[in-house]
Image (cartoon, rainbow, N blue to C red; front, side, top):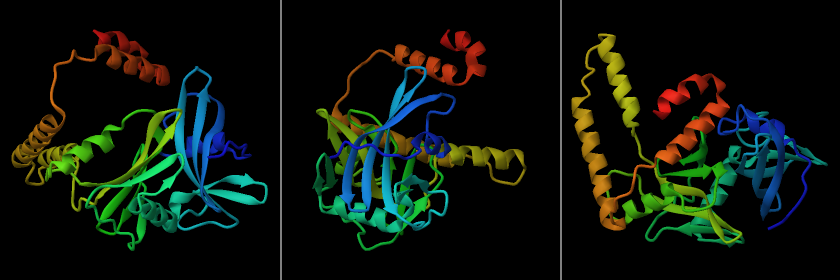
Length: 285
């Protein structure tokens, strides 16, 4: 782990990324909290972003150093120059994703990073990766029809439900979720930070909401079909199965509805989108 100073325009580059969550806020500073060299030309960075309103976020960035565009990046993946080196978003390079998958397969340790392969998992270490560019908060690389490597961009301390719940569901052999194959995390100041996960590739899968809205659109467009009854019953049965598996593995308890948490989120959203301000009182009620 290194503490370094980099002359890169993170404050200009971050707001252009699809997964950046700080839109509407003024960046006061961006500084690397942690830089972990994975190879001579590859660093994993955790960036601390401080905003003028007093809030802060931490982002994960994999940086490939080179002198020419890499992989699928073109100009999109260029972060900036630091001396005689140019920094690129490394996930545009299929070879980098393949290298990270190999680290998971080896359950490698690159302090403070720990890569973990799940028991009996088989990772497609010889497959080629393809960057998926549609996600809003993460970045995923698909390895043919075998696995998806999801890299979390905005990270925070603590247990990540995506990893932990998928792990429990995989161990329960629940058939309704893509099985967890591996993950990686960092330990900083005694706290775990989930950084990414590898799951089976769910071919031909569809989000329930997308399925429902597509059926509704077809119904109103008089294109035939539009009956969501069968799909909704199967979706409900799958959700119920997932909940039963989690209850059996993790137990159950009664907790008060998290009103304060939701109100805090509401105020944060209203602060970022002032046009919502006039609705806050009604929503609170």
